[in-house]
Image (tube, rainbow, N blue to C red; front, top):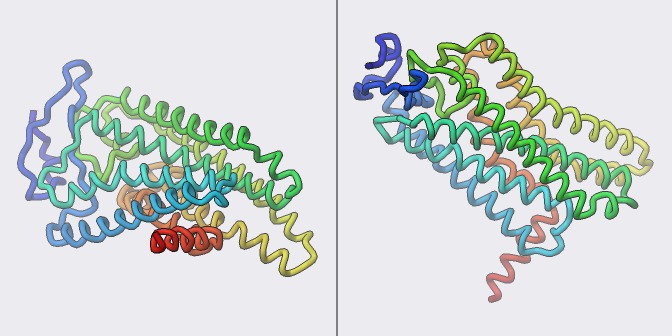
Amino acid sequence: MFLSKWSSSLVPSDFPARPKRMAAKNSSVTEFILEGLTDQLGLRIPLFLLFLGFYTVTVVGNLGLITLIGLNSHLHTPMYFFLFNLSLIDFCFSTTITPKMLINFVSRKNIISFTGCMTQLFFFCFFVVSESFILSAMAYDRYVAICNPLLYTTTMSPQVCLFLLLGAYGMGFAGAMAHTGSIMNLTFCADNLVNHFMCDILPLLQLSCNSSYMNELVLFILVAVDIGLPIVSVFISYALILSSILHISSTEGRSKAFSTCSSHIIVVLLFFGSGAFMYLKPPSILPLEQGKVSSLFYTIIVPMLNPLIYSLRNKDVKVALRRTLGRKIFS
């Protein structure tokens, strides 16, 4: 079976005609064509170089922050324990998406197998949901540090931190299994051109020939839990933090308390803002072309900015960087 005339008109002219192989069991396609960001050949190399630069900064920044936290004992605190895992998630998250996108910029065949697509979708969902709950755990850590400083060591014990971390990864695994399982139960029987640069939930729902309002409703409910619960917990934490800060009499004390939270607030707004804009709206309201821009922001830009935000606005990280570089130069 070959691609239909409708889908062929959407594929850039430089794509060779390819047969669409169907799975015998449920007549579902065995591979997808990723449309990517653009079909203009003149933009591919500049975009390749741009996103290669983004990915390089992401890898160096996140792995560098992981190394700094690991090598400096004064950063072995609950706050940096969660930051360590946030950087690890951002590195893995970006690696799940960006290399395939870079290959597609310089390849004539933007093909991904059905298994590869579902694998990318699973890890994409896993890292997104895990990061959501890691950010909420970091907000709780800041709440305890500012509102109950005398009980901080007891409240944020290693056991509690490990419990929060395992809970974040557990929610990530459960969310990824739920989303990937629901997509794998769909049938793709007409078109295999994915209007995206990665295997995301909404574009795959649009391709399915048995997708329905119930599928979109289940997606909305799952995303509301995966994103809504962390957002609510972050909001409650910062509402209590703000109330506590307003009771501080000295201006210097208020400024110090605000500076403690500023980096985390920026990261939360960037991540949850772009994620909510993409997924907490029905697909009929948000065109996929706008969805691409939003996805680009939280899959590529946010993982790159996170280590920069925490490095440039954090005195402890700056001190650790100077000490580490000093030891290397001295040795």
